[in-house]
Image (cartoon, rainbow, N blue to C red):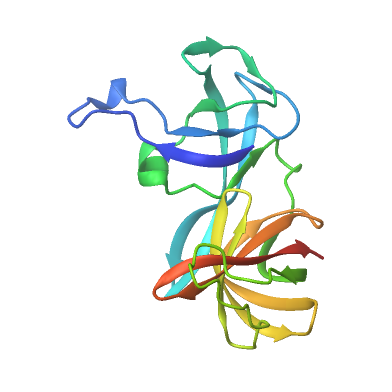
Length: 199
């Protein structure tokens, strides 16, 4: 499941015995999710250790499932689903897990700190009246990479006419063959300039 929302539903002042675990929202891409299932979340939660920023995967259990207004015992692909977990609600508040993947332990794709793409650029910039021509990607350039629900800033390491390698500010969990949208800043706003296929 691609996590598109993460939040805390507890009201301020709730006593510890009545606290509800963190809630995750998103779309199941494959498989079946049932109450009681153990699940893993990658890349997971941001932590700082010895001045370095790392991401640690999380393990939890599905405590409840909600599709629209209806409580359910299992959820399948199609539409949005809310997943109640046993996670500390402080880990899920403020959409802090958006961009992560949720799945059965050991089934999730690799976590990447750098990515290589076969890429294709559009002829003109989307969303600008003048329709500026798109220049090729260049080393050291910042590119906004959107992959599933994950968004990360990529710094171009090497680029040829149709291949690019970039280092990410925030890691992503993705399978080879996944498509990513690329954005470039124009007048202080990110604009779509093309897409890449993870190789």
